Amino acid sequence: MTVPQKLVLASASPRRIELLQQAGIEPDRLLPAELDETPLRAEHPRSLAKRLSRSKAETALEMLQKEGAPTDAFILAADTVVSVGRRILPKAEVSDEAAYCLRLLSGRSHRVYTGVCMINPAGKVRQRLVETRVRFKRLSSEELEAYLASGEWRGKAGGYAVQGLAGSFVVKIVGSYTNIVGLPLQETIGLLAADGYKVLANWRAGAKV
Image (cartoon, rainbow, N blue to C red; front, side):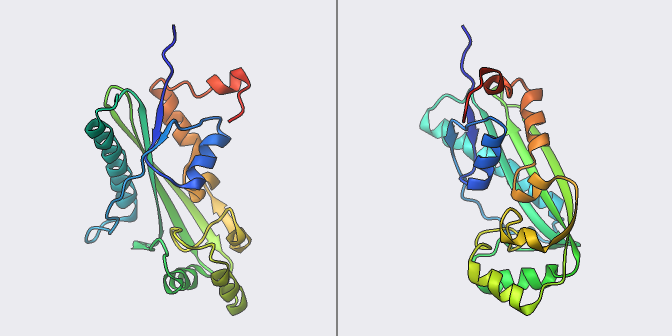
């Protein structure tokens, strides 16, 4: 008899959930971790993405252990960081932060890093770091004001959501599009499959998730 596999997503991000569903995967449980995401002094953007994704996965595992729940699930976590050079942009929570980000990104290239961390049922930690380069057109004052008014930037790394209105700002992408959205699918699926998670099971069953 086949034992059902379980996947715990250490996030409540609708974007990450939708991306997993796009790949035919429905998380069995969401366990978002509340962490201090402040960069360490002189921390590189890629190091921050890796550190936070691992911390989120390990925190989710600790939460399961404290509950006394079985820890035989695959635990998946991710963190996305937007940077210009070594300058890490905030996850905008107020319009001033979003305006700062968008003015900085206007007419120039930036990088999006997503750290993906998985802890398998045996407790092994696996990580990937994915980098995508993005170039924005020069934004007019009218475009900037309208985007800020939309509120779409709220809680987004770098102050924008590429899958929404801000997609019209993008001139060029080099690398993974889903990485910019928040979860690089090809690398995430590869990470799960390499450790035995049956990614294609729902595909073969024709399941709709």
